[in-house]
Length: 373
Image (cartoon, rainbow, N blue to C red; front, side, top):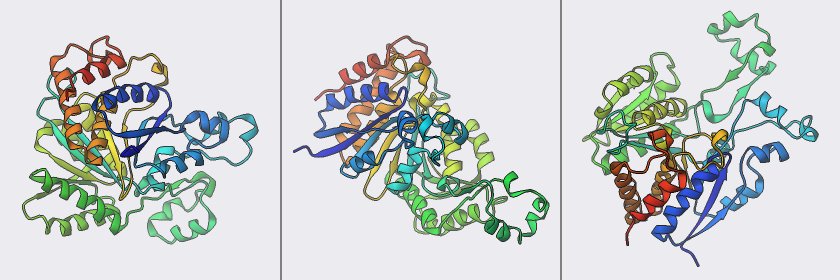
């Protein structure tokens, strides 16, 4: 019986291409695992009105973790137009399957390493080694939204003095998304960041929020961070407004080691950091809960490249490395990263985004060849 059961969720577009590439590398390290493919993505939304079928949830509940490729997502109205005709008037509402997975499995911590590898022609500079902790289930991504605004909710918010300028706005002309924080959610992501900093001997944790404007939610995160810092006297707590942080990351990215942020701000800052190390072809993350985790590249499905064997698979391969680390297979994880690093430094095999013409599978095969027993 295999040691691990791992779900494979190729998803849409290039998700299939990069999953195939990652499996070439995983096969080479001889991980003792059974891989079970499961269905997710836009085609299932169009045919079934559900991009994350219940049968897929059942499969995931019987696995240790999952590797996820990429997903196509579109705004609500566009999504409805692409439903099969017989489903369009039945009340189906599109909801991002990756967001639902984070909620369903309580994958509260999004861990996103942003490390520059020598030889990558797309690096902003070679000395960047950031890790971003993004709260993954609360904030604006909690999915509590209203349009039109219900009468009972409107009565509550109308009592707020700042709502006076909206008094004459019709409920149908107003949309509201709630930014929901809990102390537990703040404490959990902060502790993950501080624990990581201590374990990896990082000197500081930078909290990225906006408490001067978003006083209650960002304010709660700042308050909890200051309390948390007391338990980690050797680690400096740096507090930064998200807009200023975007500038400072461009100016002095090597100054920072561990960043922590709420859901939306973490999403934005991590994409900025990804560009510093070569773009989304090198950006990956782990969605981690108490007993389950899902690992993914952070790029989209890029349907125009689907099946062309053209895109950069390194983000997916490094996501697999992060999975190995989470499973406790540290030696295998280190072998994968070393192989990726060697291939990039040699600079002989490059996909189109790096100025080359190597294929997706070319990169995977060369990385696999670098892995030795």
